[in-house]
Image (cartoon, rainbow, N blue to C red; front, side):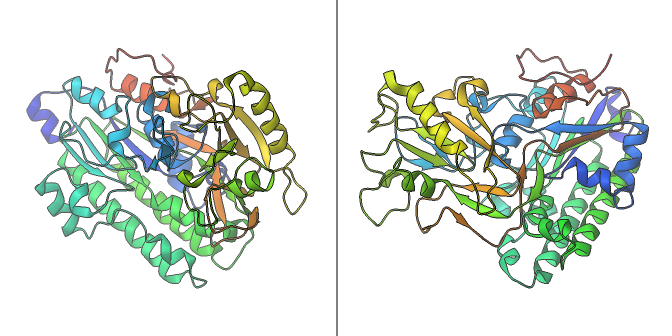
Length: 448
């Protein structure tokens, strides 16, 4: 128990959650020499594979992980969402998340929360003790919840994100250096506030892992030029996890989890180009770059990642698919998607999910009709311009994977087998003995 807890007379259980965005379970399992601390946590505590959500996109995953709710409740389906009754789209921010966040439930219970670098949390909340919003925050100043936090960030040369543009260079040296600098500064700020010891829930996310995976995972898989740099980066991350674990007292549980897995990327699949080639989508003119440029003959369109929408009468402004033909047209689209094969002859679609089977809630009016979970190697893109081929190659060699996220904890009583992202929030609330009057899409993993 820390100094502040002794002064307050508190003896409640506390939780430190560390998010490691996009780190696959198999990577840790296959390299116990790199992940010595996570391996030790698995041996003395709990560990296992998590399923991600549909779709396994960070912008949708973190709202679901931090609420225990599916995108039909959170209102966030991906990096780009469609306005209701419109073809206009927007980039979801924290203000678009409709479901109640974990840290708000903790605060409502009279406890304190420190929340750092969680994606899709901008603008930072003034309800909780302190917050630094993460991915998509427009600036460092805007990401901090108050002036004191802002000064700490400046003092530690804190960065909101890795400079991903550096990953586009053939020479990845500067990118690797930037990723390490971002990771180091994140750790410095995390340990600064861990030492404050005035929190009941500490929730911090390392997102530089996702960036490294996007640009170096192919090197790792194929023993490429930057394979050793990839593993060195993870060796540092694991050391930081171990150092944080060593700072915690016996009344504090450490939970480490990722929001999705990763695999090698071989081909980018331009879904709207596929729809155009197959006669599903067309544009008003040759100068098109957004969903608003589709014409009134369009029957389907796609938004990243792998979300497919019918242009439905009564739902879309200029919908052409009659509601009476919805199922028949959707089945036709499924058939076309299932027939899509890559340059190597493999089927692109590993699984096609119908929207109503995974999305349910007050915000399901913008839910996709279909979501494709691709086979490994096929990264589904959904731009509306600049692509003349369905299959192209880009600077990234790593892509998100649905099945392969992870959860590790110092609590040996967590039953991780068969778990998913929705289980994280109810588990943390259970560990903290915080009652929540809510119907979560997951359940606590604490085996009592």
